[in-house]
Length: 230
Image 1: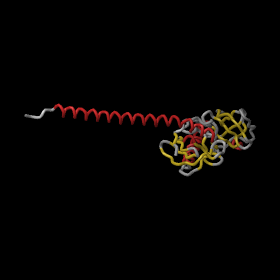
Image 2: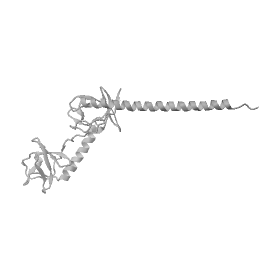
Image 3: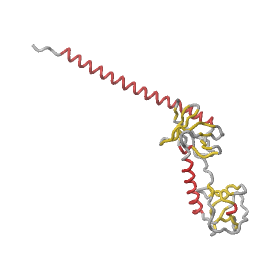
Image 4: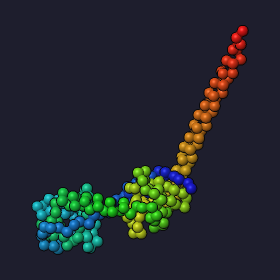
């Protein structure tokens, strides 16, 4: 079974990274918790690009997108999906009953919990899919070096950060074609490393044998030149 430590960039789509791959992808927006403070009366016209304020007039962030149910607010540090019902109407624009710092703290906690929950799903036997929806393989093992993924073309060692949640389950930020290309590109490098190690080992063996032979020759010469006592 071929085993590759693949070094390649995954397309920055959905999840961070790829095969030993340092790619990162945009993190999904965190669902903001229900607010405990009362915002001004709802009914704010929420549009993409609108600035969201807190109840004291401080800027919380900018509406990056809205689907009619939630508005994704980008604070510059995190992205949080805010229910439109949690946004009130203020003199300057949409108002949220949380400050920027409070929203970022809540989003950070949720992201950390979501990350821990997802990593618990990275277990041997779990199926992994690519960004195109194609099944890439199954997880063989998970350790400090990363995740070993068994594919039809061999095993590939991937960083844990290369995986994320997807519509079908565990998702790797590469298509099947990209992963195969990365593994193919890694093969010559792996072969060169193995060949170099073999050459070094062979050289060391030859040198040792030569030293042994030289030592044997010296011993023989000493025996031939030593005279018998009279």
